[in-house]
Amino acid sequence: MNCPICGAKIENGASFCTSCGAQVASSEPQAAPAAENAACQPQSCEPQSYDAAGNQQTPPASGAPYGQQPPYGQPPYGQPPYGQPAFDPTVNAYYAREFASIAQGGKSRFNWAAFFLGGYQALYRGHTRRFLTFYLPIFVLNYAAVIVNAVAVGSLNIGLVGVMSVVTMLIGLAALVISIVNGFTFNKSYYQLRSGDAHVPAYGGRVALLIVACVVLGIAVSVFSSMMMLGSVGSYTDDFLDDYTYSAPAQSIPSDDIDTPDPDGGSEQIPAAVNAASLDEVLTTYSFVESDQIYYFGYCDPAATEDQALVESGMLFCSDDVTLLDAVTNGADESRWETYVPEQDFFGEGSKYYSFYCTIGEDEVVFDTVFGGGNVVVFAAYYWDGTQYADLSEQETCAVLAYLYDCAGMSGEPIAAFARGTWQTDTGEQFTMDGENLNGQPYTLWFLSDGILAVYLDDDNDVEYYMMDAGDGVLNVWQYDADGNIINDLYYTKVG
Image (cartoon, rainbow, N blue to C red; front, top):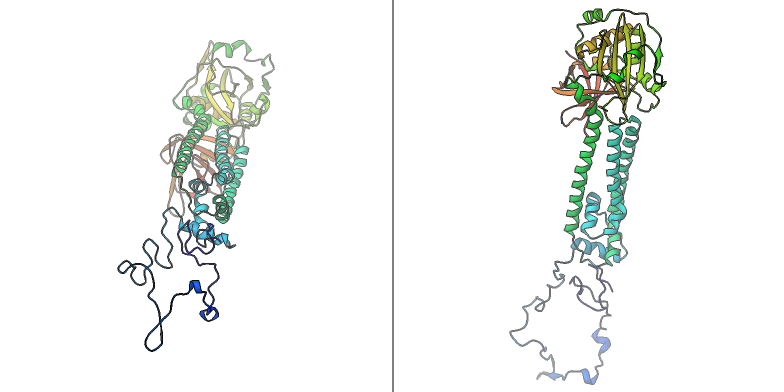
């Protein structure tokens, strides 16, 4: 027979379980009534005695000597109280009850600890096989998804970011399903593992090792994600935001090749435009244009690999409908672009460098740009003064670009400019953005996709970046953390 409490095997007729100490009912058949067993075997009958009236007297019961018998109603020394199991600290009462129910053919109850604690609880109870089967794959998939998502964000691969968002959601759904299944099936699986023995172990050391491993992996993945994020944006902006000026190597822009295509075929001749003005006139007329990142930061198609396709996709944030190539084509008297390899790779492996040559009246202006990872940066500009190339300041660069874009006929206000100002939600929460700071923090214009502007914060903060969508005078702003999770989704109207 089995113990009804812990399920352990015990001998038939035993009063107590030798495993957990619980009192059990004997399965031995009860003695027949005295009337049916009146015949007494001679060797087993006690001598009978009678009193003077002829009534049979009951002999005194043999037992412990006087003074050594237990008090009335108490079990013999060393036995548990009648009807109570003996206390055994190594027996887990919960699993004793569950194992007893399972042993008698009953259903096991839902284990909430297995549901909420999952792999940690499985290791703690020594159910290593369940941890390896159910939870280790989820741990691995989670960390792999975070790493791939970091690479996607770092390379500005919006398509892969979208795919990984779906993958992350599916992993979370799978983890929930596994937790539910584990809650329903853990007790029966554990009963089979322990062979019904309720003396269940506790391995706190294994849980501690798992926690340490998760913390170490979490820190490593967070550092990697931050490096990928900062590497894709910071490397394009740090030098330029620190008033970095670039003097082109003489051999990269030979003066005698200005009006001819690159003999290697890396250049594209651009038709002459109709607008004309001297450089001095442009700088005087557009002196009101301040140094502004909407004129030297932009974005391009990250999937483009050919030079022609890449250059044609380049946009600056000063316009949402006119490309940089269109602005140069329609704003200058003569213009062309050509590729070149700088003496020093300033923006990282995989970046491509182009020079846009623009003739304005008698003057020639050159914009050195870098395309890579979905980003465009106009990182240097200079003009030919008759004897050599001289640098244009950031303000002068922005002024010339503003002129070219005006000549190209750009219309409407770009979202990067529209988002500037003071905004407020219906609940009074405010949002302020100018040319350099967003809510008091320096920012970098990141990319524009399907009309949605991405703005990256340069300083460490709970908010890593913003996504902004404008429509009917309302600005919808999503706030994201470093892991790409949405923190807030708010609607603002402009108040200043």
